Length: 206
Image 1 (tube, helix red, strand yellow):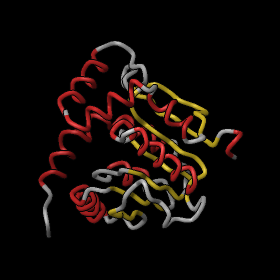
Image 2 (cartoon, helix red, strand yellow; image 1 turned 60 degrees about the vertical axis):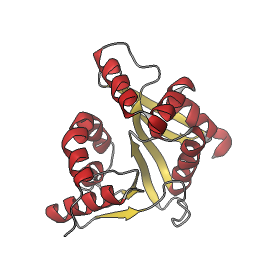
Image 3 (spheres, helix red, strand yellow; image 1 turned 45 degrees about the vertical axis):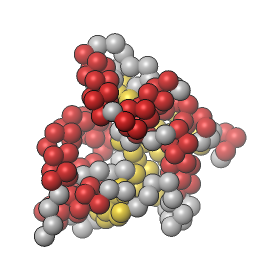
């Protein structure tokens, strides 16, 4: 069996940092629902949601992440979750509203603005509601905000440029507006560094 060092490191060092976000998102899934997770990474959230949902589909563009997720599903003998190597900007292979919920955690700030809007448009088409967990904008000042910005700065390159653009443009609220969505509820997590939000089509786009 193949082994992913990158996937292991991500699972050990990154996943625990956002565990509370995953637990909150999981609590927002109803029994029996069909869920799609965009940019699923190591599959930790998909596997958590699968304990409640009827079926979960996790998508990621990284072969390392999908390999890690499939191995984790195998260890847990999870039968109601599938992980697919797939570009989040093209959900054309899925029918309209085939999912009850579309979920993405800590991914929107990694996309350039145009890509982020395209991803949300696809999620809006295939699911009845959208749940997004990402950075709060603006972040509430404090240690959590400082650590978050430090981590993003350390990532450097395109990742940091996209993070800066996300924050400077107004975060999730701006992306949602451009995708014809409205935030119907949101709550702060992590001392105000993060939000968990539910999005639905705006009145003009229903």
